[in-house]
Length: 165
Length: 407
Image (cartoon, rainbow over all chains, first blue to last red; front, top):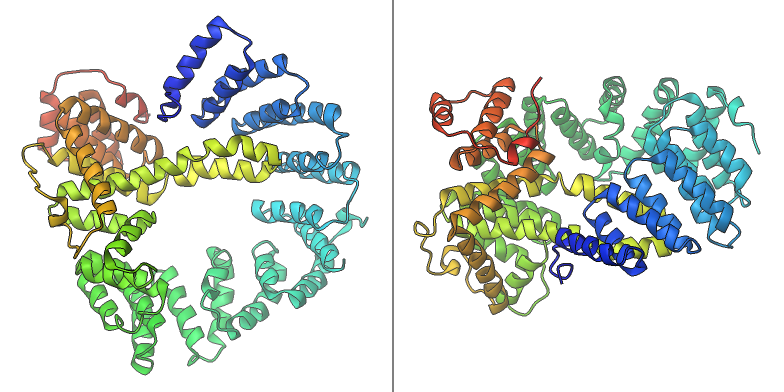
């Protein structure tokens, strides 16, 4: 009811009271995590997401939600670590692992670890001649406005690869 | 795979040329990240090629490049070598002079261009912009815009600029009639209803400010409140995207979206003006002092549709219900002030507005901190204000916690 009326904070309080009665109820935890993210109660959202993973560790969605919550709250190193665990467990699922690898690359770029990005992209991506592969790198570098010679020449060289495909 | 670390400047230059051959726009984008040597050798030719195309957005394309003074000078030197009679060169020069705040030269350049090209609306828009920047009488900018009123009727961008000026300094109904021509509805009533529902916040804020200046505080408060509701709706809509974005695995875009909501949306200038406007309206209104029979009478509208009328009635009822209880006004203003202080803590207009609220509701600690903040910023505070603060009783409240602590 509170959620429908957009009283998200009241709604979270009600969910917390409900959890006192049934502390591992997946539905309550899931809805509460969503509202905590909505209200940007990020520490609470991280705790809730952790509890959800303990309750349902086999669902990939729960793991990736925790990664995103850590990322949003600025815990980039933890986001990377959990994403690595996720890729180890679920990385063999076709067509999905690449999205997560690009996401890992974007987190590394945000941390300023350009060297690690290069190594990671060269070692982990199976398809390295796709437009998305080069664009992901090139766009990140241009947006970060890195003027160092290495990064500048790197982005230009990547673009050259794109144009010659 | 090529050896990334072996790439040197001499290898970059031919790559840059190859890219520029394929796409001039990519070349412009590269200019903002190449180092000085490449920029000096390549920027003039890229700039000349773009300018020759006569695109109206040339200045915008180079805005990133023009942020640096040394690179700006290279562009200026290149500009001076081109044909000075060319309209695109004149327009770029004028915008450049505005950027470096040489308004008098920019104005004289544009005026001499207008003398030869009286029908060119772009030049007139730039002239009005320069006059506004110069702080000349607002009527001067208004007069400039009115000269091209009839010739801009088919251009949406120019009409929206014209409508802004008309609302600010002239007639609201004339502005609405101009904008109504772009709305595909059978009659003026429905066009007005659409106009007020399409979340055109630039239009709503101009209407709100105009109503406030005319002393119609209730209708001003309604428009300000409408803007706040639009931003609340934009913020609330994200609830549907959390699950969707994660299922679709668009993580990077999802993060950008969340950061946009937390950053640009919350600190939006229009939202700030709406919050400040609401504070000013509510501080100056009481339920008795603003006895407005009909909101429609205040607004300069020929006809209003029933849908729009209902919307305005709902907004005015909300404002009236707030005013009927001093406690609800106080709580509402506290919430607005909290938001303003969190998002614009260094803005003197915001600090002044929150100070006015603090004085009205006897928030002595908060008022003291705000006065000190204003004085630190070099804004003078009248003795009356300081005296009224001293007379207030000390009462802790939640608002003062958000005022930045002083060193």
